[in-house]
Amino acid sequence: MSPSGEKPTTRRSNLPPLPRPVQEHLGQKLRAQYHEAGDKPKYLGDPMVPVAFDPLLEKMDKTERVRRAEKVGEAGRQAVATALGEPLEITPADRPAGKPVRRLAKHQE
Image (cartoon, rainbow, N blue to C red; front, side, top):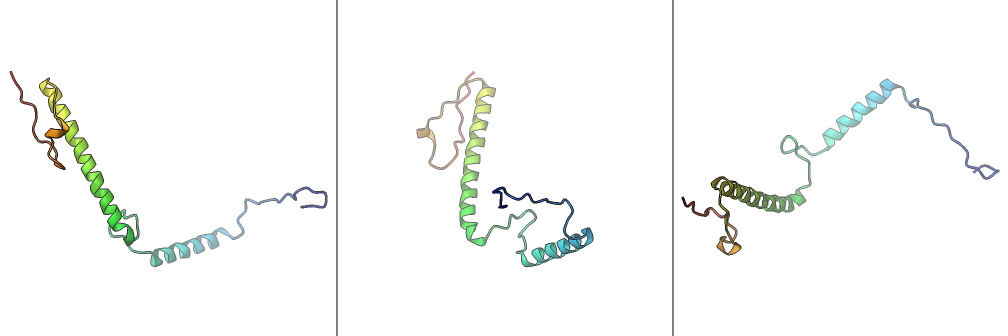
C-alpha cells in the first residue's frame, strides 16, 4: 500500500514479455515433452484414465448397458402395443428376474 493508504495501481501491458517466435518455440518444446512423458492411449479418443479405475468403469458401463437395454425394450413393447392398438399389460411378477420380457399381449381379432 502507498503511504496514503491506497493500493498502488499496476499497469499491465498487452505486450508479451517474450518475442512471439520464442513463445512458439518454447510452446513446441513443452508440447513435445508433454506427449513424450504421457501414457499412450489404448485407442483413439481414450480419456487416459488410470488403470486403478478400470473395475469401477466396467461396473458402471455394465449397469448403464442393462439400464439402456431395459429402456429400449420398454420403448419397443410400447411401440408394438401402440401399433396393435391394445394396452400392454405386463406386471413385475410376469418378468423373469434380470431378463427382459419377450412376450406381448396376444392380439385378438
